[in-house]
Length: 265
Image 1 (cartoon, rainbow, N blue to C red):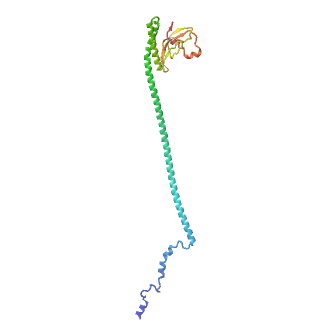
Image 2: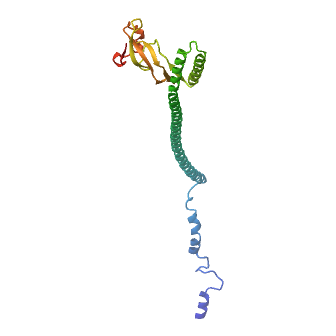
Image 3: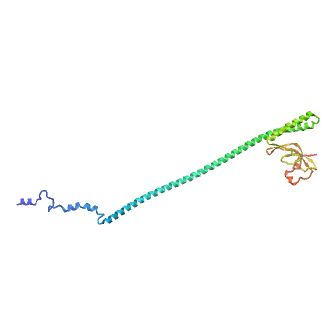
């Protein structure tokens, strides 16, 4: 009897586990727990609500993307503005450098023009000084020719040879003076003119009641002027004892009686 009872209570081979021979309800519940948990966010939402939530999520993502793009563009714009500001600073600096360079060039050009003009003037002055020295050294020769001419003229009357000599000396003298005139040399022969202490050297005085006072009477040695500069004053005698020269002629500068030398009798 005991053996039979054991056989009846022992489950048959191949039968499912469990007291009633049915599948285990607790295991089935545990197997279906994972699918229910993944669907939890949408649990209790209608289809329209899920669509609206998806739209909101898409709009938020689009807004985030737009903000990121806007921020990137703003950063790029700031960088470009900084580059433009830097380029403007470089441009202003370059303009300043260009202005300074132009000023230096203008100063150098002005200095060069001044130097060239100064050196040209110095060369002309040196040439004039050299010419002046040469002319001064030739003036005594002209004086000798004039004295020889006066002597020959005084002794030429009735003497054909002396007359021809006087004519020859006069021709040489004229050619000499003409050559100097071409170089800008002028003769100062002030006989009868108002005395000018800047051009005349008084070596004596002569009384003459018929001539204006301080008038050149005799010219002992003619003077010369070169390029507007008196290189030798004329040696003259000056009158006194005559009427005063009219006021408009006072600018000629009458000579100082005390500085004209010994009186001529």
